[in-house]
Length: 255
Image (cartoon, rainbow, N blue to C red; front, top):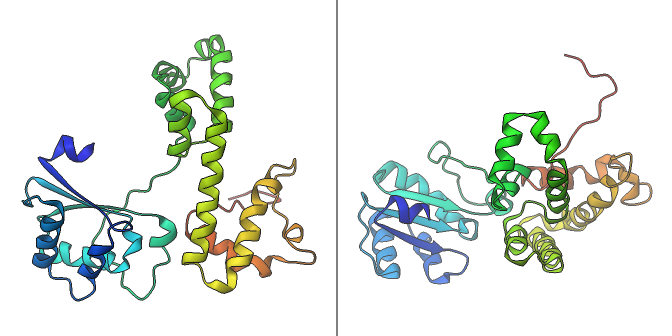
């Protein structure tokens, strides 16, 4: 949508699906050769001033990430957007990352306000932003209704889209399970093989543990006799990939 509204044309390449272009980044990083190949693949003539190039699922070809450096240094006139899973981008190996050559934009699940907006409730969003407590109280029942929906659906785009389509909660739950399963498969693809079993133990234990009244993560519940150091690497890996956020418990907060 951004490409169609801001550019005359968009060249879109999904590097996970398009195996033919993988070899494009194996030999060298000739910008001219890459552009010619993209033109042949898309059937479009790429003009730097009016064409947006999108590399989707860029983590599937780590060398394509490195190629961004050469686009920046040798052909900065081209406008390129890449998208990919942090799970793959953060842990790619054997290739250099173009430090200082790319700008980052992190995408997170929809917040409650964004969820309201997606449901066509922009007026409720305005009421919350305005902090008018009399109005908020007047629409209390409606806020609670959508908050309950949000608790169930969450903010991942695909489940939200399914909910917006026909409010089918069974379909929403099915998609959520599929997403969780996909993440587990990605663990095996990207993580060091020796920590994969512990990754899965942590990943599957987090929801049940944090749902308890204490809301604490207890290492001993993962495996009898286990301690923090036994799962330190697995949790650090999940943190680095943006899958979990560690909140440290303190006894006495102070500056």
